[in-house]
Amino acid sequence: MGLLVTFFVAIRVHVHLLAMAEFTTGISPCHNYVYQLNQGTGDLLINVFDVSTKSLVSTFKLNRILRRYRIRVENPRYIKVKQIEWDETGKRNETFVNDNNSGAGTGNNNKSNGRKCQRIAVLVDSSSAVLVLNIKDEFDQPIIIRQNPLEGIDHFAWIPTPPKTKQTAITEPNFIDRPSSQIVVFAKHNLYAKVYSLLFSRPQHTIFKPLLITNTSTSTSTGTSVNNKHNNSSSGNNNNTTHLKILSTLNNYFWYIIADSLQFNSREECTNFTMMEL
Image (cartoon, rainbow, N blue to C red; front, side, top):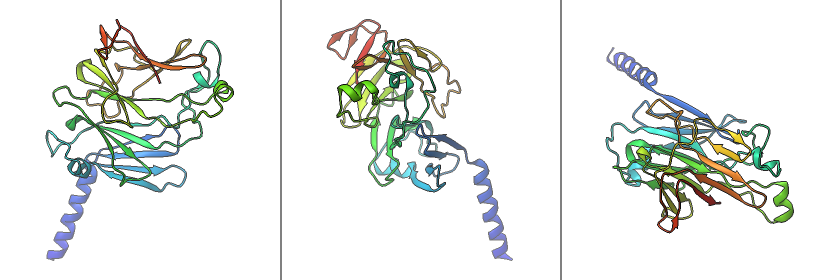
């Protein structure tokens, strides 16, 4: 009788935990993978599944990662994931593939370019940190971007790399369509935006007081804005987001952020406009 009662209680507890679990999913731009975030129980898990085979590719236990790399958490009992973004490796932007002089593109910007995503970035709001995880190797050391907790991280965005086009195929035969390797991290209250490269330990650039540009992802004659979706945003309002604006020219590929700043990176004078080349 005692064993039966214990077994019954165990089932009740397990069902209760499942009921409390909060599952969030998101498909990769390459349409090959889906992540599943479970942040309703004690273990904060991210599972990555292969869409075609429906098999589990990797599992990331965020609680263990935070403890292992000594990432400070305001409240260890409450770890909040605010945003998850796939890298832009598998995403093709028709604006640049068309190779027309105006830079305007037609078609669906969410089409895949045939390459598979390699990384997924996770914003842990309670730690003011972004974890960049290698989905092909769950035991690989993550790339960690930390910010001052007093300034915090509002959101982040991957900077897409220029894809191979008809023009680059002619002018640059050795052009390599490389995976995304840069991330822009926006501090809370729009204090600044920092550009990080996955190849360096320090930020490459700092842009002070970035301004909100638009509330939707648009394609115009001058380029395309990259919409940051703010997955799992605690604010509940995902419309007013800071966007990167992407410009295409015949031989170059630029992005810019409009900012209310008189100085850029302490070197160049710049009023209300910051543009950089990838």
